[in-house]
Length: 338
Image (tube, rainbow, N blue to C red; front, top):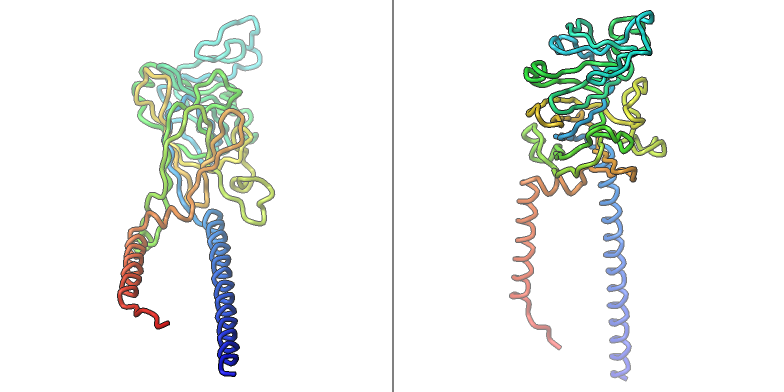
C-alpha cells in the first residue's frame, strides 16, 4: 500500500515537473520570439526615421546638379562663355566646336559673366586635362530671353590661367556624382570613399556626432543621396521625391539635396575632386553600377551600438558579472541528495 502511494506521488511530482518545464520552455520561446520581433521593428524604425549625414569624397570627371541655391557669376570672371548667338547670326555653314562650343549657333566669348545661375538650373559639370566645363542643360522658363538663357546648351569653360587660379566651387543642389552608363564620352567615378555620421548615446550627452560607418567606393558607379520616404509612401519608390517636387533631379533619379565642393587639385589630370555632404535627415547612399539594381548604403541599428563607448563598457561589465555569477554559483552549489 505504501509503495503504491509512493509510486503515485512520484508520478504526480514527475508530471508536475514536466508541466513546469513545458511552461518554462513556452515562456522562454515566447520571450525569444518577442525579442526577435522587437529587434526587427527597432531596426526598421532606426533605418527609416533616425537622422544621419553622409559625406562622400569622390574623384570623377562628371557631376550632374540641379541648383537649389543661386550660383553667382562673380565666381567665373576669368572664364570663357559658350552662349547662343542671336538668330540672325546663326550660320549652319560654320564647322567646328572649339572647347565643345558648336560654332554654328554659339559663340565662345572671353568676357565676365555678370549674371547668376538661378535656382532650378540644371548643370552638367565635367572635367578634362587643363579644363573644367559647366554645361548649362536647362534654365527655368522665367529666365527666357535673358543673358542667362543664352548659356542654355552652352555653358562656362575654365581653362589655362582661369583653371590655374581656380580654388574651389561651393554650391548646393540635387546631385548625381559620376557618369551614367550611357555617357560613354564622360569620365566616370574613378575612386571615392564615404562616411556616415550620426548620434549615439555618448554623442547625445556631448551634443555632437560620431562616425557610424565608413568605406570605399568602387570605380564606375554613379551615386546620389536617397532620402527615405515615409512608411505610408513606401510603395512609391525607394527614395522620396526631393523637396516639394518642383525641381527635377538629374538623370531621372530621386536625388536628395547635397552641399557640394568642387576642386581641381591637379589641372593636368582629367578628374576633379567632389566632396558632397547630405542634409541631416534619414538618408542613404544609392549606388548604381552598370544598369544593375541600386546598392543602398546606410547605417544599421548595430552601428551606433557598436560605436558607443558607454554601451560597450556596460556590455563588458554586464558580461563579466554574468560570468562571475555563473562561476560562483557552481562553486557554492551543494551536491544533490539522492
